[in-house]
Length: 81
Image 1 (cartoon, rainbow, N blue to C red):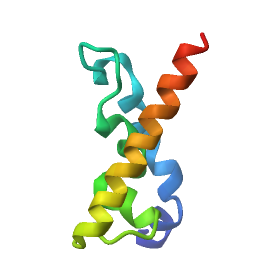
Image 2 (cartoon, rainbow, N blue to C red; image 1 turned 90 degrees about the vertical axis):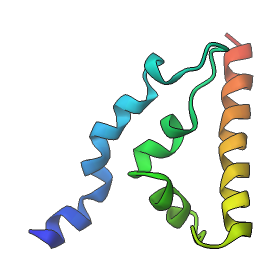
Image 3 (cartoon, helix red, strand yellow; image 1 turned 60 degrees about the vertical axis):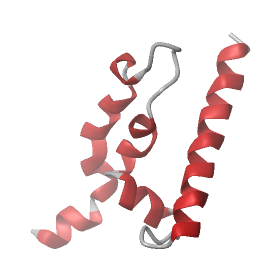
Image 4 (cartoon, one colour; image 1 turned 90 degrees about the horizontal axis):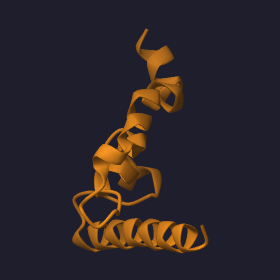
């Protein structure tokens, strides 16, 4: 059973999709950080999926930069609406 849930980790995160709802926006209308990494199953899995080590300070900074890139892409997409 463990093997099945590991191999289906992408589909088991379907509950994480609800993290992208409006309840995860701040008063400025931007999404929270967790709405971006929640679909990965948490911050550690988000980092690991990009080959980053959660215990390495430089990698943590890189993960923050990736999140900011996601946020900027959302800003650009929203400005086109």
